[in-house]
Length: 375
Ligand SMILES: *Cc1c(COP(=O)(O)O)cnc(C)c1O
Image 1: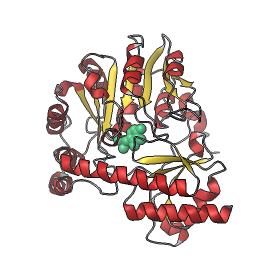
Image 2 (image 1 turned 180 degrees about the horizontal axis):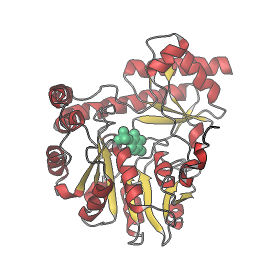
Image 3 (image 1 turned 90 degrees about the vertical axis):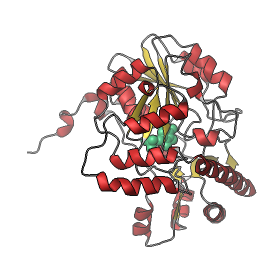
Image 4 (image 1 turned 120 degrees about the vertical axis):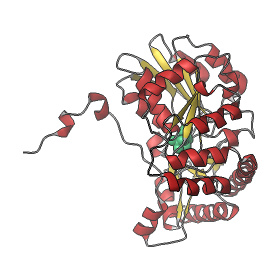
């Protein structure tokens, strides 16, 4: 008789469903026996990182027999200069995902609550539930709203009570692409009790500067309950290295540091991130390419009568108006990986990341063909 390990698991863990990532290229090519496929499924950056970051990462390989600097001194100094903030306010993470888990560990437990919106980033409920805390989900905007399926700050405020320790907001939000305007977000944060932290995940900040999406990091000095998360995975093109960070009140950072794994960012990650931060023109070029990609994909969808939601990110949520699974499968057979949205409760939707002009074109053609043959 083997042990029923489920009986041994922490009760909160039994209620979790694992995160479903975008399908890796290698897996698609293995399963379908094809090559030259394109992945527009995980909001990765088609230009990749700055050459300076690649150079720094390569050079850092010479030092991988040593543990990394557990305090990440150099990167935190560089980030402190970049954000004009004290280094004590910065917590480094193995991706910003790591910060989400640290925040949950430090502030959530059975008996307290975390609040978030419907159609929010899926790691939010996952990190919160794992602690045994109660998760309150606020209804999102209706499909017909100006920010369809986006966060409704009134509903979110109504989901907060005296037991709420954290409100999680991605701005812009993944997977919807929608965003809260500066006044709306700031007003919401100011309306919260001082026993509630608000985590504003700005993973897409360098893309969202194209629209009226705020830079919440500018509010840290007068909103002490605010935590802002940033990542090197998106516009900086370092998703594979796993580096993110949190900006917060130093007392919050000190608490996060108690649950942080001592060497959570690698030698290579630290070096590459510091170098990437110094190459603003590269990030600008990435943002410019993304705007062209959003335009190209939007036009392409429009041409086949598919509705795209507004986006401040490097991805588009598209509403097929019918089950998306067969279209997703047809795209896979054509060598184009996009993201099915059924795990988010949106079975009629697909999320498409922007790629190069050629990759976007390939996706549009495959989508038109899939829709034609499925009609
Ligand atoms: C992609 C993404 C992240 C980045 O996660 P990392 O762990 O830094 O790679 C964080 N938040 C949101 C909302 C995202 O979409």
